[in-house]
Amino acid sequence: MSNLENLKQGYKYFATGNMEAVLEMWAPDMVWEACPGLPYIKGDGVFKGIPAIMEGVFAHLPEHFDDFKIHTKEFVGDGDKIVMVGSYTGVWKPTGKAFDVHAAHTWTYKDGKVVNFYQAVDTAAIINA
Image (tube, rainbow, N blue to C red; front, side, top):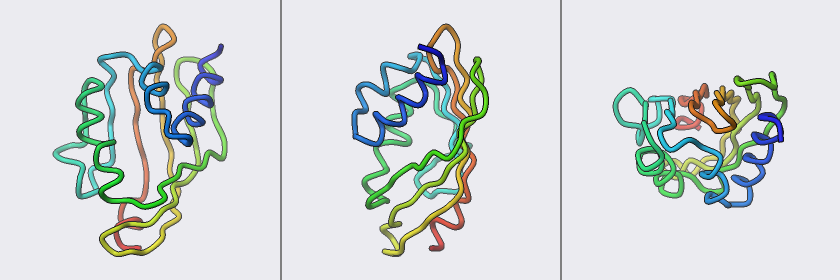
């Protein structure tokens, strides 16, 4: 399976809530670079290792979002670096308002595993929905 096929499958796993399968695609020491504009992202938004990513990012999604979804529009690249262009939709719980914002993810692979994730999203459009 190519890295591109792997990544597309990862988004499908995330959409169905199969985080166990998603985590199997990541290197144990993966670096996750989240947008620090969201209130639950602490510090510079850089998390190293799967436990830190789960605690610093994914544990907060149900606390802050209802019906959070990632919609993939296109993928650029098929080597060790792939960009996903798409959007996020959901409801920001503190305001109860729905959002639909552009998002881009850059994924870096090494030896068939994700070693780095970089997120770009309009966090202000989410929290000010």
